[in-house]
Amino acid sequence: MTDWLSSTWEPNWRSFQYFNLYRLVLAGFFLLAILFPHEWTGRLNILPSPALFLLTGAYMLAVIGGVLLSTHWQQRFNFQLSIQVAVDVLVVSLLMYVAGGVSSGLGILLIVSLAAASLVGRGRLVLFYAALATLAVLLSQIYGVVTKDFDQTSIVQAGLISAGFFATAILARLLGQRIMINEELARRRGEALENQILISQRVVERMQDGVLIVERDGFVGRYNPVANTMLGLSGEARVLLATCAPPLDTALAVWKTGNSPEAIEFCGVDSCELRARFERTASSDGEVLIFLEDLGRIKEHAQQLKLASLGRLTASIAHEIRNPLSAISHAGELLREERRGEMQSRLLTILNDNVGRLDRIVKDVLEVGRQNRAQPELLRLDEFCRDFVEHFTSAEGLSAGIVRLESMLVMTICFDRSHLHQVLWNLISNALRHSSRGLGAVRIEPVLANEAGRVELHVLDDGPGVAAAVREQVFEPFFTTHNQGTGLGLFIARELCVANGASLELASNASCGHFILAGRNDTCLLPEANDGRVGT
Image (cartoon, rainbow, N blue to C red; front, side, top):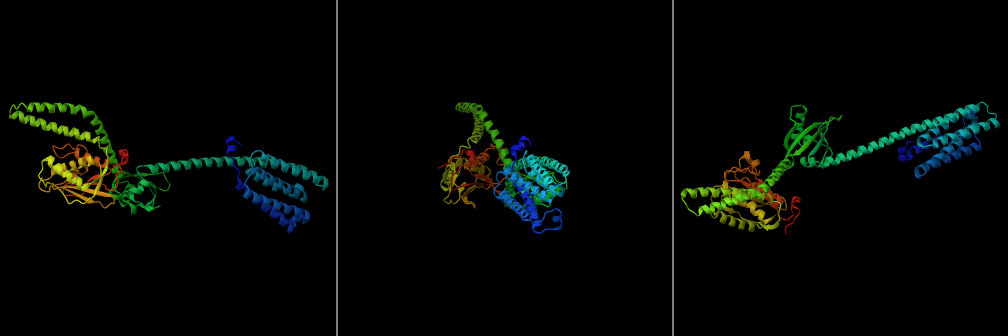
């Protein structure tokens, strides 16, 4: 036996129990033969007698004891096996002697016992068992020749049977080793396969994309938690794809015909935009893999890349642009003091206006880098909005009533004070730019959201609203439809909302400009991206 097999060998108690059951049947057969003699027992000279009855009864008790020990006391395997084999050798040798020696044919029973013991035993013990059986058969045969006038030539037959004992033990042991090697190999491969399955399951569970395995009959056999969330499968073991995602089922049927692209887009739970990719497997069951991607997450990732690029741009232009810009502004002010004529004044006005515009662009770009420094607190929304409208109206020189605050309920919102001021300033400025600037042109309306612990702030104007062609771009950096805009106001407003655990969305199907700011009104917990600080 090889070293690694010896180190990993474990007693095969189940096989030993089967061996003992065979011996139990054999002992019962011998006992019945003594209790109920037949013609063939007479031919073997196995006739009822107290000695034979005692021998077969003792053998039955020994076998029963072996069965009980192998079942309830699974220790010292080799010792138990050796004792049972020794009992078999002793009993069968005595019965052979009574039946007339090797000519009775009972020696085949020892070959069966040796073969079974060699299959379940270990190491050189199988040769010991063969030697023990050989000594017992030879001694009983020699003793029979001396005391019972057995044929002297039967010694040769006993020797041949003894050689058969060794051949059987060795061949059975080689077969047992081969079986054990295959079992060990199967066990190792099973463990490797199980480990690989566990790793694959963990990888699939941790994937940010959804994974579905659709069977030939259209049932979803397996899926990961992300797919469950995207499609709302409710944790069911097997669900029909046509029931949980009809557009996906239709697209899969078209894809199988070869008349569909590799990926399609559709809406999942809560109207989230999803993209599905189909892929055939080598499975004999004809299963199909479906990969689901969250387009919202992809867009958010692209937005983060844009933000990272913008941050790098901020670091490079902060001093490169603002310092010479300040010098140009200062020079313009000095030139304005000379008052040389109307033409110079108009040129200086153009210069100052563009310097101010450039300064606003730099200021907005720098503001993007400060968005994650949120320190939220519970603010009285009615008081904050009232003060903000007064300040904005005064700063912009507007007539009273252009920016109108609707009836305010007493409610709170969890937000950084300066961030909320910046968000509202950007939203109101944008609304005012596209409105008629008449009375009530811009309205601020607070609303309690349907979701518990949420509050909404609606900003509306009486303008034409956002064109459907550009609705998806209004929050992108540097996108603007106004010649005086920087394209960063709405982008910064939305990023500041995200930094405070809130959201900013453009209302769907609105005939006018309508933005909705939604935040919490019960607790001030920052999202994980903002260092976990808590406002008080």
